Amino acid sequence: MTKTWHLIGKIKSQALTESRLQLHYAIQFLAATGAALAEPLPDYSHTSLAWHPGLEVFVGSAIQAPQPFQVALDPVSLKLILLNQQSETIATLPLPGKTMATGLDWLQQAVSQLGVDGRKIAFLTYPPDDFPDHPLAHGAAFAANQALALSELTDYYANTHPLFQTIMATTEDATATRIWPHHFDLATLIMLPGTKNGSPLTVGVGLSPGDASYHEPYWYVSPYPYPETASLPALNGHGFWHTQHWVGAVLTASRLTDPVSVETQQQQVESFLHAALETSITLLQSESSVQV
Image (cartoon, rainbow, N blue to C red; front, side, top):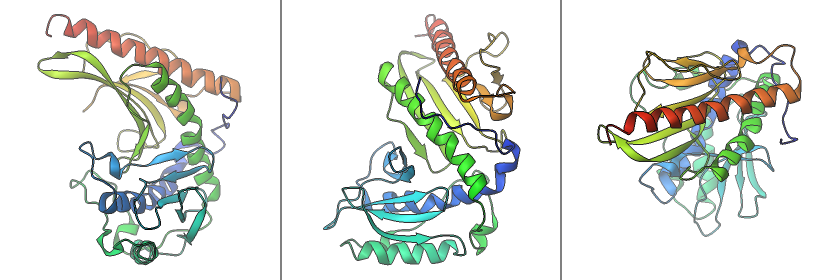
């Protein structure tokens, strides 16, 4: 068991929505830089982020330049950071009080000084009605005085990252753990042998900070192609099956055992993840055995 787990639940999980949306918009600077300046990859992972456990920041793709760099975000202070290859700070911009446009202007100018064309950086666009709307998209400034809620949200990522690293290291054909800018989920994808109805078998294991499905952080394990929902088995750790629009095992933050401790929280989340992963693999393999 990792000794780095931070107790979560200091703020009610359903009260994190506003800070989560502001953080979701803030990471778009990192995604935009990767999309414009990193080497394109077929799975679009050059637009994704990673969690840096040493610095406790989100980091974007490494950018090859006369002065190589990465764009990072301190999720508690909402500070944009340019890092060199040694993860040392080159420049910073606190986002509170700034608009998305102001932040983009600063970023374009700052990276141009490192030898790349910062004018190429533009925010990603997403399918209509599939990215949260917010006043930040319409010229509002990032809010200040969010440190407590942002710290709580950050703990979800910091706690979950080593759990997913363990899954990735001990599970064959699991992708690197990434944070995707579209839905802001931390996830790894496990590829399984075989197909079902012509589709490859996969299991997505992730953490969402909250979305249209659940307005609070939740962990999920989603087998694909989706299994039949009529007789899904019971889950460990107070997890349950989500079956509307997508199918997956879910553990919401509000279902963490109360009263809680660091040990019981981590054990509950680990128990849920490992049991749901094993169950999902079994479901896919049993259904694919007659439809490979």
